[in-house]
Image (cartoon, rainbow, N blue to C red; front, side, top):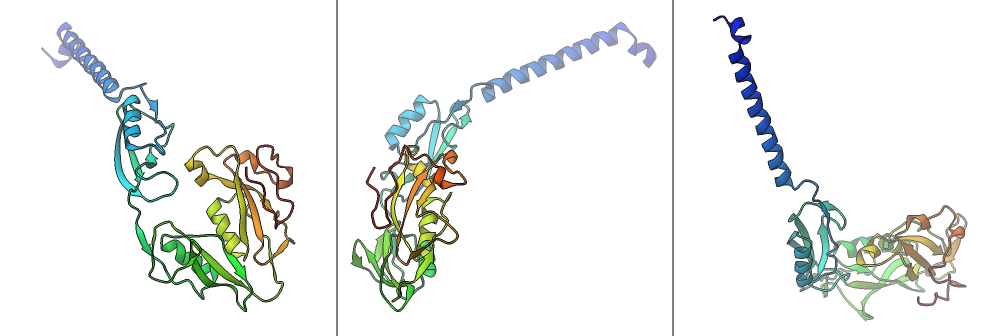
Amino acid sequence: MSFKNFVLSKIFFKNLGVAVSIIVVMIMLLLIWLNFYTRHGQARPVPDFFGLTMEQTAKLAKKSRLKYQVIDSIYTTIVPRGCVAEQNPKPGFKVKKWRNVVLTINAFKPEMVAVPNLVDLPIRQALALVESSGLKMGDPRYRPDLSVNIVLEQLFNGKKIIQGDSLQKGSVIDLILGKGLSNQRTSVPDLMGMNLEPAKNKILVSTLSLGTYVYDNTIRHGEDTIKAFVYKQNPEYKEDASLQLGSAIYLWLTVDSAKLPVDSTLLNLSDTIPAPDSLNKPPDKP
């Protein structure tokens, strides 16, 4: 039988039909297996583990049909020791059942770091050295001195500290800075839209101090305080606005971007406290 006759024969079409049927069945079985393996359509939102203890985390993971794994620890003051400080994927992200959520917890024993020598350094250099040492800069105090914005003393909890002293990582160091011997003034910085730490740093390098800062009612947990940004400052930023060295700037923070208009005088502050009447009078506590 010639090839042409074979292709046109009933036997060929019968075998072809069997082969196609087998391929179709195999594809269907593969799709069924993939659907089962990937649990198609069974994605669920990841719950918020932030601030939970390990016992609470285990219960919530089991209830949500998820696994979790602690891969690291950090030291932070935002959550209690031994509690979840970070998670990946973030809350609300959809994953399949029994997928792994990676957690970072707050260390039980804080890391100790050595205090650097900040005396006689300009504020910008001192700020960079404090941050690289794992410490934080507190609110500065100013006193009359020949120098301007130069560190005169470094303190911890009101007591003088020197180079080589040990402090917990993340501790706050307060500085006493020189403000000169005259009534010198400095420009009011524009802090709108900035997170708290960068805003504090900008205030410091402007030879000013941070007064009271207030979170509005959109701040619900620790992570919100990190994301919060300035939506109002007092005094307001203007090109010709200035303050005497060491004066205080007051801040209001939110996570609601709608509260960041072009003109801060148009803000509706019904959910926060009123602005202070003067720079020397801080706002009432909320």
